[in-house]
Image 1 (cartoon, rainbow, N blue to C red):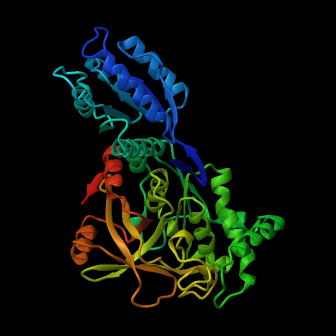
Image 2 (image 1 turned 60 degrees about the vertical axis):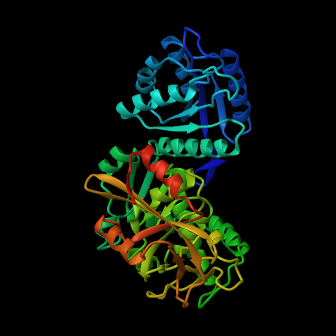
Length: 457
């Protein structure tokens, strides 16, 4: 599994330490055999693994191991006790390692009457200490040869890495939130305290100058890329492409030159009024390419997309909760659905370049959310000095009616959607939600726990 920085895939780097005691105990032969099984399991996982070769049994060896992990850029520490280690080292690890820690408890020898490892007891002890130290951790239990264990370990490492990467992430905001949508405003110091994310603001005038200043050769080359996508046109023609490419390249510049990991843009009212175009074709392309992008200056929406990328959840669709009944919710926006979430171009419901539904200017991407997908509706938001996270699992359906823009119909089974909506509104959820393909509620719950977000159930 790879994670995303901007549109570029980067492997998660994991440092692995095996814990022990200066006074050996339990079945050391069994513990060594389990250690080798763990090493073999980790070698087959799609992470960049550094394994400290020597067992950590005292404070000097722990300091040496953690220094080596840091020097190799480890983002996640994976700690194992194939035979129970020294619990006195847990506070030292909590003091010296400022990133999330994953504890893996391996099983007892099922044969004989001897207590062979006490691995779970040791991991449980460390977990209880970390909780009191207010240190983020995950705990995994099971045999390294079990597919279920490997899947659980993969989830734990991804969640830990996502929490760690957000601590050093940089999100850009061009302009501010859309006029009147005050709940989408982000308090930068709350953001920094809660998630570690740095907010960098950029002026709209600066962005307009960047868009106007894109070299003609770059525009022409990008227009060829747009043509290669095979997107049909509706009520618009290729005359819209030069400015659409300028807007795309202007936004892309912030990822390439300003080193932002996610970007939110105030896309109205200035851009269509001043430049004569909406940026949604460019935003759709960026989201489809793995760049976390937020419409209408929605910083928290962009961060949610960034977290989803790091968690391996795929492209994010930031959209409005338009209407609902007891069973379904209609999701809609002016035209920014990632290509992978809609049917193929040229097929019914597939993406096409069109005019905005209201301010009749290009260039939006009209499309329908592909029916029959498992999906998760997610929202991350700030309220009263804390961050909250909600996730609803459902299935996309064929829409009951055709709409302009990008839209989809999602069924939320087992709950009255009217009650769900009222509860979320009273908990302060802003009007945007983010849609990911697949069911990810359990993964997001683990992430919320590691990132210390308030979980809204």
